[in-house]
Image (tube, rainbow, N blue to C red; front, side, top):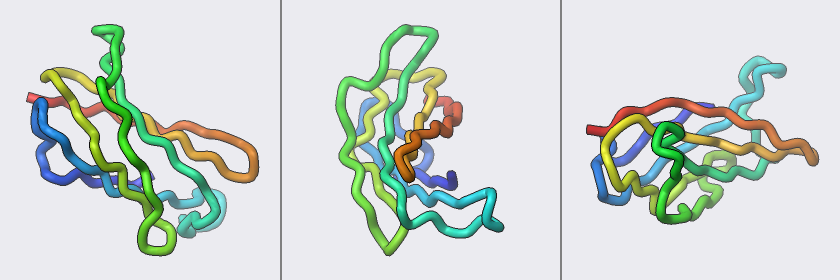
Length: 99
């Protein structure tokens, strides 16, 4: 999973978007076009997630955009990318710090 955020850096308590591209590691990093994507985030150390549910849409013949992301407080957040393809769901995740 490749992603970028807008605006960058991620603002505290303001909405932002994530552009996502999924590549197939088993096929020379070929663009994955036949997947569904869900994006979420949480602060495991605080035992809570986001207070909103982002809208994820496919764009540009294989990419995705998650709109309405909101990190309502500063700190350590985990981003979750749940990719469903051919009936199998896999999760990619990353840690981001918000000031």
